[in-house]
Length: 311
Figure 1 (cartoon, rainbow, N blue to C red):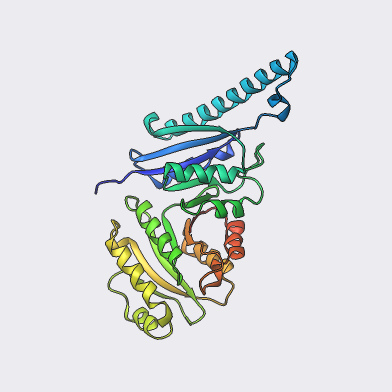
Figure 2 (spheres, rainbow, N blue to C red):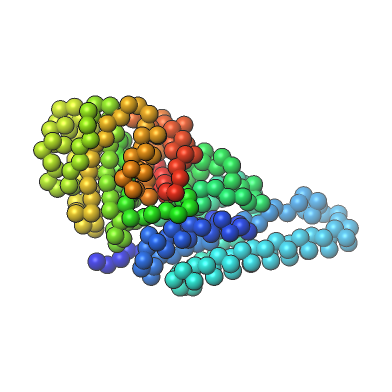
């Protein structure tokens, strides 16, 4: 199988925590010859006093020292990140750097650059302590979801097992885009995939190979799940058309009592899935999980997993 190139944007700062997603990428992609990464580093903005026209000799000297110091900090941060990547099996040719002064929110900068570079995903550590106003610190979820409307976002927690991925199927287009993204990003990996739909109309779990579907699942789709039949059909066709062996993919329905974030995370732990892929559709659709507050609930509560958000 010809490997299609995959490009990532990795926001970094001066901390080791911002480099932790590299470990996840190396575990996910044993062959990294077709992977490229752009390291994105933001320097602190120039203080207003240094922008004034009438400056003293002391202020001019202070400005030069400030600029030199931040350039050196950027150089060290990028050099450290590049060393970790090279030591992890990436070649220098696929590692790019982009350093810019912070003028807007950190999420705004990263998502804008992701769109310009047309990367396949923005990858960042779930939590870290950062001297920056914090790409990875605090409640960054809303800003990322607001600005990254095109590029998927991968939130990575520590010690992720990438051997299995759950792709959440709902009655909206974002979930189908999430599936398409997962199929592409996982095509050459050994990761097993499970397309899962949670429903209050399901009285028991129903699991099936991708093709042909088990009669019990087909029957549920025709009866209780009739409103979701189109999305099941589209998901099945999309998966069969992808460069992923059908025996790596299963499709299932899980009962729900309406507490979807907790149910999804519990099922992911039970199934041993280290990757959770979801479509974020704001408040649209009939599946309550895709409302913004519940998406953020998943992103707040997940542990030792990677959550991929597509819009």
